[in-house]
Picture 1 (cartoon, rainbow, N blue to C red):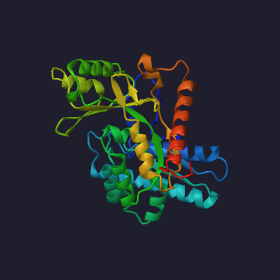
Picture 2: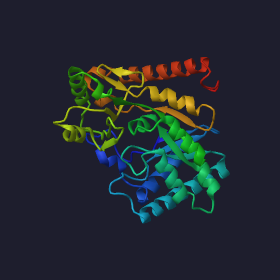
Picture 3: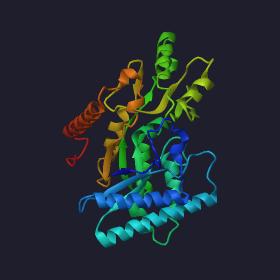
Picture 4: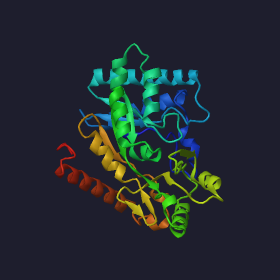
Length: 321
C-alpha cells in the first residue's frame, strides 16, 4: 500500500496546509496518482492486490465550487478507468481510497457518501467506480470528529461504498475538563500545550457540556480562542500518538476507538490493507519519544497483534486475523 495523500516532503520543517496541495481538481494530483499506480504495480509481487490512500479532494476552506468538484470527479473517473484497464490487462487489482480528514472537504462519512452519490457515481461505468474508488478510513480522524466508528461503518455499508484501506491510529484527547478539579484541569491543559509544534496541522475539536462541537483548524488557535475561559468539555486533537498508549498521564488517547472499528467491521472481508499510521514520532513531546524509531514501531505492531489475538479469542473478530 502507498500513502498518496502527501504530494511533497511530508517531513520538511513546516508542512501545515501544504499537505492539501495539489487538490483533486488540479492536473498535478491526477498525474501524481497515475505515477503511484505504475510504481506500485511494478513493486508488488504477481497476484498481490494494492491500495493507495489519497487526499479527500481538498482542504475545506474555501469550500470547493461545483465546477471544481465536477473536475475532481472527472479526474477520479480517469483513475478508475486506468485501474480497470490495469486489472483487465495484467490481473493486478489496485484501488484508490479517499481519506476523510478533519477540516477537509470530506471530513465525515456523511460527506463521503454525499460526494460519491452526487459526483462520483454520475458515470456511465458505475461498476468500475465502485470497484476501484473506495474509502481509506483513518480511526484517529473519525475519533477527532467525534463520529462513532460504528456510524462511519454503517454509513459506508448502507451506501455500498467500499472501505479499501484502514489506518489504525490514535489521537490525543482530554477527559471532560468540566468534571475535573481545577488542579486536574490545569495539569491537563498544561500537558496538552506540550503537543503544540510547528510542522503539522493539529485540528482540534471541543465537545462542550451541551454536546456542541467547536472546530479549530490548529491547536494553537484553540488555545487562543479558549484563553481566559475556564477549561471545559472534552478536547480531541489530530495528533497521531503511539497506538499502544491508552493514556498520557493527565491526558488520554482515543485508543479504544481502534477496538470499536474492528468490532463493527470484522464481518466483511473487503478491506485490502490495515496500516498502522503513526507518523508523528519525531515531533512528539520529549517524554513520549523513543530513542530508536524502530522500537516504537515494533511495540505498536506487537500491541495490535495482541489486540487482534485477544479479540479473536473473545469471538469479536474472524480467524482471518
